[in-house]
Every structure is written in C-alpha cells, then in structure tokens.
Length: 219
Image (cartoon, rainbow, N blue to C red; front, side, top):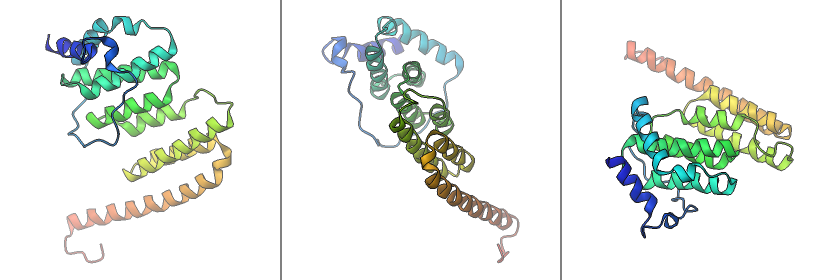
C-alpha cells in the first residue's frame, strides 16, 4: 500500500536507521499557508490509523514518558514531511496530540492541534480552549498557573481576531480562574471585547441593511 510504503520511508529516515529521524526536530513556525482540507472520513481515518499503528507498533508500546514525548514530536515531524495521503497526515497529528494529552504535555498537544488546524478544517480555537481549560500538571505551582493564565489571554486574542467573541470571553474567564492575580488584566480585556463585539454586531447589521437596500445612506 502506498500509504504504508511512504510512511515506512519516513520512519527509516535518510540513512535507513529509525534513529535518524531526529525526534527533537520540529520545523520552524510560522510556515507558508496551505489550502486546508476537510477532515477525512471515518473509514479513511480507520485505515490510516491501522497503517500507522502497525508500522509504529514498537513506538506505541513505549512506556517511558520522555520516550513517548519524543515519539509524539516525531509524529508531528512526519506529518510535516509526508507526501502521503491526507488521512495519514491527519492521523499522525491526532495520534501525536493524544499521546501528548495522556502525558500531560500540553505544549506538544497544542502544537499538534496547531498543525491540524493548518492542514484541516477543524475548529482549532475550540479544541485549544478545551485543552487549556482543563486541569493541567503543576496546578499547585503559582508560576505554572500564571503561565497558563497568560496563554489563555493569548488564546482569547486569537479567538477575537477571528470574531469568535464567545470563545474569547471563555478564554479570559478561564485565565482569571487559573490566576486570580490576572483579574485586572482580564477585566480590562473583557471590557475591550464587549466594545469589539458591539462594533462587530453594528457593522454586520449595517451590511444586512445594505444588502436589502443598497441606497440606504443611514446604513
């Protein structure tokens, strides 16, 4: 099968040695934009998952967390490098995200989701918000809570830039819940967000009026 053969080439690496893939390598971001594709059908995903798990069965059996994290990073690398089918790329990234999630490695999981959103028409904002809103490792560490809160504020800005005001507000609320010391910043952002949403709604209403009445100067 073509999918299996091409994936095998990636696993073998340039020297034919599986270790030559360099699990620590991740291509730089941002990258040139690509045309996003629909999420593959369930049957296509099932075939791609079977291929990947068959060829990578030793890696999926790894138990040591550092080794599993390295494997998740390698899956992201393969998804970037593959000339294979869309289902294979999709499953490489989904498997990477799932492994990272099981390890509590939020950074790698979010990276896999970003890559999925680059190639496929998934709701990246919603998926990232779900990841960042759930309890994570190191919740008792104030520095970790602050870092999580700041990351959620960044996600809020990303959502607002796409006119996703509800998700933007949810991210801000989650940021304040993670680190109450961010309340002042969050409340200011919420006020800004409310003004942005109001302006957006007025603009959208004006556009609808102009569609129906192109000569309406008041719109």
